[in-house]
Length: 270
Ligand SMILES: Nc1ncnc2c1ncn2[C@@H]1O[C@H](COP(=O)(O)OP(=O)(O)OP(=O)(O)O)[C@@H](O)[C@H]1O
Image (cartoon, rainbow, N blue to C red):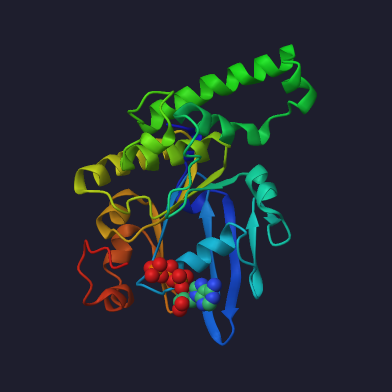
């Protein structure tokens, strides 16, 4: 276990801060003065019934949307004015609800593309295959293979991404995001379309990713998965934060129970 895991969650440093964020779309307030933080080395779950504002919150945290007011800071730096690639360089990576792989590239190439984000090798180095280029490429290759082993992609390195099983495509997407060397890995409904056995494997994978030293944000409809894998949970309802706490605290919170009343425990309501 890394040093980060030995520290109590409450005393860990904030990696990402959502500070009094409001977002309006015309007359609709999708997020209303929402504040919470994600601490180094934890798995934080963001949950809430349909339309609660999870995706909007995710999008403002990852720089896709600008907040109407309030701020998001990654490692103390406001991300509002940053371009997406700058946010990636600062240390945030995400996967998507709808898988976005380079379908005509191989398994290995997809992960190597992620590693290129931090590459200091220039066009000249690549064109003339300088020693610096070969060294960097060699290190990226080793790391890419290691990541594929960590996430458990079963297909061979040279298989085209388009030919992978659905589960392998989801795992490959996680490996590619990890290859950018993020401090914070954001997973947007990673269990969508998974059967119970695949969900169990995914839980193990998310824990393994955290144990590798990554901090994880998880948006997920599957309550069993969220309750089983997260350290802390933030609950949204109608754009407001209604609760924050450990899985046990959240399960026993009357406001959360009321918000989910009528929704089956394991139901993917989307
Ligand atoms: N780009 C947009 N323009 C206008 N309204 C939007 C936009 N994005 C989201 N909304 C609205 O903001 C509210 C919150 O939506 P959001 O998708 O964030 O909820 P959610 O919790 O992710 O829901 P679900 O679980 O169904 O994915 C909804 O009323 C939605 O219709």
